[in-house]
Image (cartoon, rainbow, N blue to C red):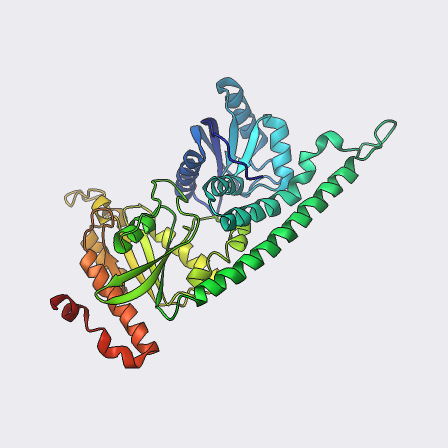
Length: 405
């Protein structure tokens, strides 16, 4: 299932809906993200389709008229793949495939494909395969249409359904095997974490492609893989970092994303053990992204799902060098100032002001404000260490005192 092969550039169309729960602006932002996911997976987006609906069509997700428009465009422009922004049910995927007569994917399938490309270690590949099997299981029926014998009559009796059931059993057995394999690896990793001694543990968390790996490289002088694509980091990387004379461990974890597939959250909960066992979280945020506040909420939601929302957290607002507010004309009496017009200084006076010292503004790429970042992290790690080992208080002076020496 996870065989690697050369990925050709596939021509694709994106399809989304505008509903009462997802307005036009949100739909456009989600499709922007879906286009980036498509690019990451090796595809080229040719056109987007959206439709306003109360709720998605239970049979074909979008209306039959809009689906016909998509079909006409696919035929005229030799499109390889149709990608839907939301997860499709097995029935929807089967119905749409029959109509469009091309490869049909949803956001979950696309993310699983990217994870399959990115998985390097045996552990990550096992987790991805588990998620793929769980996603595949309810969709097996549509993959065996050539063996179905449901219509009855002469010549229509046969082993079709038994073939499907056999395949379902194989997939279920594979899921059980993969879960058992992950349990063994989890025990091994728990022992490894236990062997790290009593060093304070810090975890980098945040939305995908916000610069966590770049920051990791800067503070640890390591060479963690960095790329301007989604989910460049899949395997958790742990490095020993020393600020002043204070050693601690920093782990770089997989990035989160909106509408993260349930299968991936479940499969990667063991990878996120580094987050669960961390003493301090560094929540990295791409402040140059126009909708970074929603990204923050998405990350917090997933942190709560893995019982880590209560941990001490420092908000690290990254990419300040790339932040550009939308120009605002003060003389325009009609214009209304919005968050898009805020400068960094104005942002600091909003809810960020309530965070106080737990909000740091940096550029990991250009190494701006890194001293302030190191000082704040040093203080928090030192407090944790001294609380754990009170007799070590004299070993680690205040950051300024250590710098002066």
